[in-house]
Length: 391
Ligand code: FDA
Image (cartoon, rainbow, N blue to C red):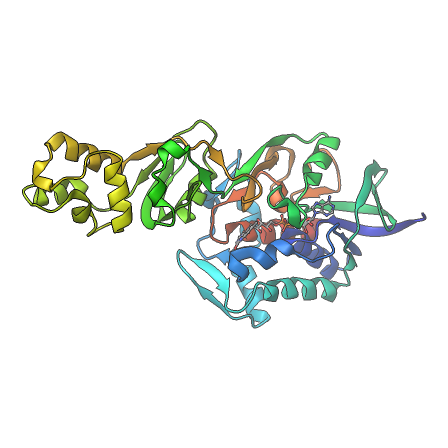
């Protein structure tokens, strides 16, 4: 196969790769965008329940996990949530804010895919979908990229192949392997924004399906007040997905099931009543949950029959239920992958590898992981734009 020359090859036509290709090609660079999948940007399509939570108005470095918490600042400042929103508005895509600064499409995530595709086309990006990579080698002045369709020789190579979550729609460890090939370190990866599983003995069978307001915390992370959803396997819902990114196997999580309220005061007021304990709690918690939760700790009796120590035990557990999850639901259910290409090996201002001229890593493959709420796409847009501006 004859070698063809091009300025930039981008591997991975997801969120970050399309942004990088659009930016580089609109600067006048010749760009080939390669993806092994036949379908474009499947993760955008399924994101945000089909409506793509495409950014967050509160985007700031403290919403990201990374070994170097300062690394993402430069890219987020160079291309911010306001820049992406301006692009969305230019395409007249209708959107709304749901909660906590989360911006979603009114209609469909396809609007975001169409926007990015149009931006790539505007720059004349060459599309190479359904194309697998056979090898990448460094040569004088750049790289050779051998694909199943052609051989490219390029000056710059942008790796935007994403993380490991949801393998059936195309996730692979390609980016990590390539980083290792070029001597870049990898921060150990793990599923993040993922439901956690409990040992059945820690989970009261009747809780499945219950959803409640909760403040959740992992040992080494901030507290998140959002909904928790009990499932047949453990816990899910936004509060749990958030803390899962900070959780490691063997660590305890703590749930306050009555945040901002005081179970002790409620019990004090009702301590002489004939009402059953779960019925008292049912003012504040779903009845089914109150019943199962209390029954796991004490016999169900009228309030006036409890000793103070028994009520204290229930109150303490409600405000600080400590559980050691037995695992997570893994990459099959994780929204993102934590860890990735070590930011120490990259320049924060360009996303270029420090020791390999012309090689860039963008998006989820980098050790920058956002909270739930549009932060991961914003990282994809910001990092893709920055690399596309320099490659
Ligand atoms: P992305 O995964 O988008 O793209 C990587 C591309 O590389 C893919 O097209 C893949 O086919 C390709 N590729 C992989 N290996 C390859 C190989 N060997 N050769 C060639 N190509 C290869 N985030 C958010 O901010 N708001 C949200 O609403 C959601 N919702 C959401 C829902 C669900 C179910 C998931 C799984 C994830 C989310 N996310 C999210 C996270 C978000 O989707 C994710 O962070 C970004 O898509 C990451 O963008 P990247 O471009 O880095 O990877």
